[in-house]
Length: 608
Image (tube, rainbow, N blue to C red; front, top):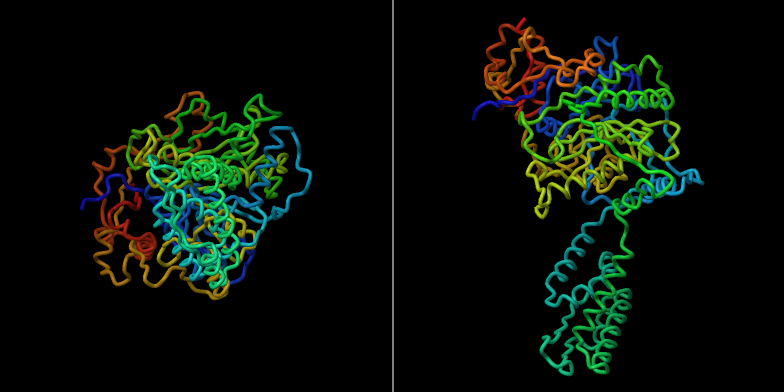
C-alpha cells in the first residue's frame, strides 16, 4: 500500500506540565500534563481520527514555561495516568438528542425576548460561571445541574426488548399500534404484557360477520392479576371496553368494525402527536422571523480555514470586538491579552484542510467556521467557533456580548449547534434526500471537547443526552451513565480508567512489542523548503483585506508538492537527528496510532 498523498504535517513537542491547572487550580506535583504537537496542516479526516483518540486542538501552550499562548494550531492529548484532572472526550448523538427542562427554559426565554421583547422574570437555576476559571476547551458553563437519569437495569432492558419483539410480531396493524401504546408505560417498568390477536374482516366482508377472536375479558383480567400486574389490568380493561364499544357501534351503525377501529387509531394518533415531547426544531422554528416580533435572530456562517468571502475581514473584526468584551468582563482578562493578533492565532487561524484538494459538492465544506449570531440583522451578540468534520460538528469556543448574558447564550448557541448537526444530517446524509452527499453519510454527532469528572462545572456536559465518553484505552464510545458509575468508584486512583469491556480492543494501536526498526521505517518526515513554500493566506483574498492579515501567514500546499517531495523515514534519518528527539517521535507515533504508519501524519523538517 502506497503512502498518503495528502498528509497532515506536524511538529511533535512531547509531554508538558503546566504550572497550575486551569480546572482544579492545583499547583502541586500532580500537574496538568498533556502531550502536544503543532499542526501546520491537518486534513479533516485526520483530525476526526485524532479527536476520536483523545486529541484536541485549540489550547494553551508555553515555550520553556515562560511564554504562554493560545493557539488554534496546537494539538494536545491529556496524559490521564499522570495528570491532575483526567479528561475524556465527550460527544452527543445529535440525531437522538433529548431536551432537558433547563434547555427548554433557555429556548422559551429566547422566544419571549424575540417575540415580545420580554426579559426573563426569574433568575434561572443555571450554575453560576466562575469568571476566574480559565476554560480553553470548556466554554459553556450555563446549564443547571440536574440529576443524571439512571440507566435501565439489565433485566429491564431485556423486558423492554421482549415487549418490542412481541409488538413487532403482531399480525394486525390496528391491534398492534393501539394496544402497544396503551401498555407502553407499563412495559417499560418490567411488567408483563399479554399478546392479543384481532382478526378484522376483509373490506368485502359483511360487517355483521366480524369475528372478534380473543380470550374472554375475565380470563384476561385473571391472567394479568395472576402476574401481579395491576397497571396492566387497568390498561387491559380499558382496551377491552373500547373494543366492545366499537363492536356494538359496528352492529348498531351497520359500519365495518375495521373502519371504526381505523378511525379510533387515527384520532388517538393525533392526540399522541399533539402531546409528544417537543423536539429542538419545534422551539427554534417558532422563533419569529423579521417583522414577526420585536426582534429576530440571524445566523451567519463564516469559513475561517481558507476563507474566500469578500467581507470576511470586516466580519472577523466584529467577532474580535465581542471576544475582547467577553474575555475582559467574563474571564477578567487584561486588554493586552485580547489583541487582534492573539485572537487570530487562537480562534481564527486553523490548520484544517480538505482531504481532497478540491470540493466537488454543494454541501458545506468541512473545516473551521465562526457562527455569528446577529440580533435584528444589525448587532452581533454571540459567536460560536466550530469545526465541521466528516462525522461531527466539534464545538470549540463561544463568546458573546456580556450585555446579553440574560439570554444564556452559552446554552443557546450549544443547542443551535446541535440543531445544525441535525439539519445537515437530514439534508445531506439521508438516503431519501435529493441532496444526499456521501461525504456527510456518517455526520451525526456533536463533540463537546473534554469531560473532567472532578471538575464540578463539567457536569453540564452530561445533560446533552444521549452522551458518550471515549474509553481512554480502547477508544470505544460508552454511554456516559455507565462511565459515571465507574468514575465515582475509581476516580481517586491515579491510573487510566477503562470504560469498555475487556472484549473490546483498540484496533488502531501500535503494539508495544513492535520492532524498533520497523516502527522507525514507517515514521515519515516531510522536507520543507522554506524559501519556496512561505505564502500568505491573505493572497487568496482581495487586496483591500490583505494588509491587516499579513501578520497571520500560513503555508499553502498544492498536490504537486506531495508528488514531487518524497518523504524520508525516521530509520534513514536517525544518524542525523538529535538522539533525545528520536524517543519523542516514537512516543508520538504510538499515541496517534496506526494512521501514522501509512504516512497520513508526517513530521515537518526544514531543509535549511
